[in-house]
Image 1 (tube, rainbow, N blue to C red):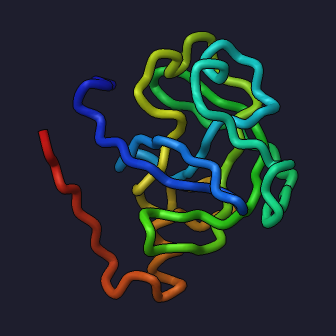
Image 2: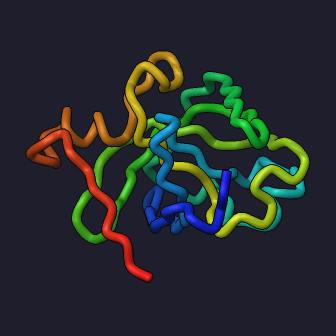
Length: 150
């Protein structure tokens, strides 16, 4: 994975909002960010989600094991309010990383991944963020685009 050409953006999770930079990934379908319960070296160099500071967080307690070409994460599923820009606020299931492979994304310019892939790639029993937006009627068409600015 060439991190220099990765597309990243900001999202916020929880109430009050905790900000994260995520990589938009069309090769996966899950949203995950590192949590305060992660003590892997790569977690310590990024923003960490603190579920205890969010009044809207719900622990689903389902274990998660996500494998990528460059490493893996282990954690649990949770659900909370997600904010994208100033426009969209909605409930979303996401993974909270509790352990990551050694040096996995340690120097990456993002904290976690927002997968935009097909639902068949998602953690069993979850709805990918983009599909959730369509299901909730928050976007009119099942289309997304990237605006590239250099």
